[in-house]
Length: 242
Ligand SMILES: [Zn+2]
Image 1 (cartoon, rainbow, N blue to C red):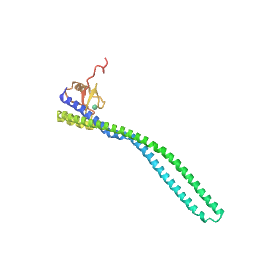
Image 2: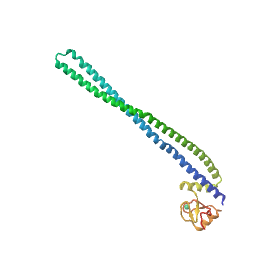
Image 3: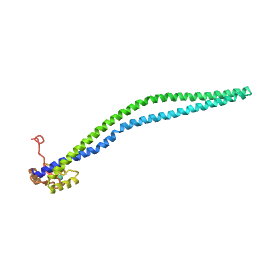
Image 4: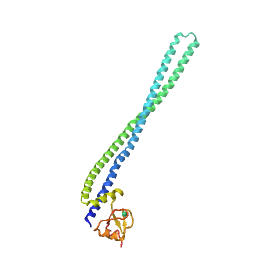
């Protein structure tokens, strides 16, 4: 085979690997970002539960304040007692005090109920925190794994880019220039095999004489349709049943 064609095939192989690697490298940050979603969901749930508790604590304080206000109310009402002149007035004040006591009792019942709910909700917090922590550990491990993958990919890319440059140096400028031009225009694929008389880049027929030239491999041939360099794919015994 023409040594220049050999180099072109080799260059294409390396450059395709580089393109694949670059694609998977570009996916990694997105994968890390997507891997965060479970953690974020758990964090949101914890935050919602904590907000809920704060809200209820505020309500509880308000109820306590209401109770204190009503107790003041009772004390104030009772100061009227020494000034009372009639039984009727006396009874009226006591009734007023009873009514306030009733109000306080309702407030206290509400407070108690709130405290019970609050306690139940607070009990769930450590569980939610543990789940968060678990998810955080999981995510951090995943992130580390992905970052290691990224570093490995970078290293591999470095090696491949150096190899690509090395092989490119062995190719004559006219062939290399055409390779680069076609690769740029054709999604990185500038060297393809043929199968029978079909170009495996554009899947169009090439001339039978050209197919023979490709098979011989002594000259460098381009597909007349897509301008890719062509080479003969060795048919394996198993691929061609007799
Ligand atoms: Zn073609």
